[in-house]
Amino acid sequence: MTFYKKGYDIIRNVISEEEAYEINEHLSNRTDGVLTAEISGTPSFYNPEIAEKKHIEMLPVIEDHSGLELFKTYAYARVYKRGDILKIHRDRPACEVSMTLDLGGDPWSIWVLDRDENPVEIKLNPGDALIYRGCEIHHWRPKFEGEKHAQVFLHYVDKYGPCAWTKDDIKR
Image (cartoon, rainbow, N blue to C red; front, top):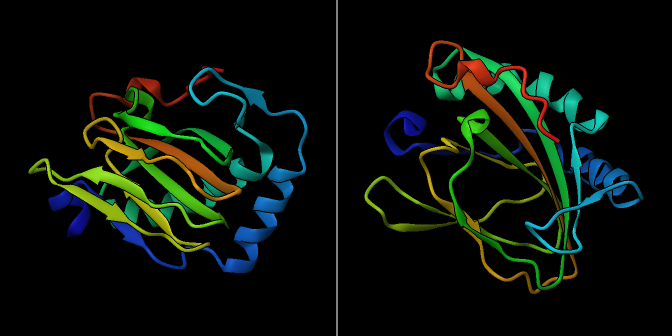
């Protein structure tokens, strides 16, 4: 199993390209995004309703690919703009198992360090997803040269793991 061995896995066409574009359009038209210090001036959304639906729908998919029984923690969405950079990082405990779902826009690779510390470029198409051990696997995105790119992040924890206490994450 790739996820178990590598700490990440790619799931192609987890949702349709059409659905990815619909979610992208919905998020892009919202005006209530929070501007965070993490990526200056880029709208972010904590548990938006449209992502919460995906959070529930994707749970059995991620459990199947990870081989784990999971609790949902939180969903997050972001609409990136030209010049954004996602610095190399690992996630907080509520992101033990994470999915980044590509919603389209201009292509933008995500990079991970595999368990041997080798950088791996991952190219996703709209509707594709990367699942990864967010607390273990370093991940980042270099400077974005396109105009717009949207992602939904769905976070889970192992029901029997050390981060299970975060299952009702309410950080905003």
